[in-house]
View 1 (cartoon, rainbow, N blue to C red):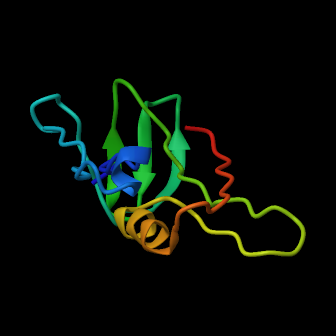
View 2: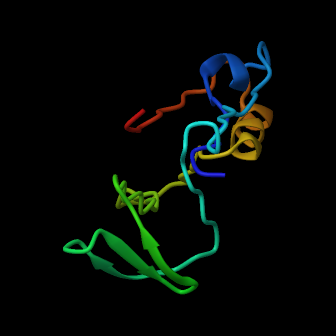
Length: 106
């Protein structure tokens, strides 16, 4: 589901807290989630999104296109931290005295 990302805090990486995904009741909030549906065009005049499965009318629209991690130029290993398996993989590689730099927007 959209934004069903688990918290990947330092406590999770240290193994001091379990990572549990944020749960939202989209139907209860009146949000129509359509997975695996490609948007082909936006008809803002008629407040419709034309999709691969047909037109969808809207009163409010949020465009959430996702993102791809940006790699820094240069030599050396770079890891991404976007999932629980990424966090546990990093945790498994850490050792006392390790020097780690985390760069991110959240």
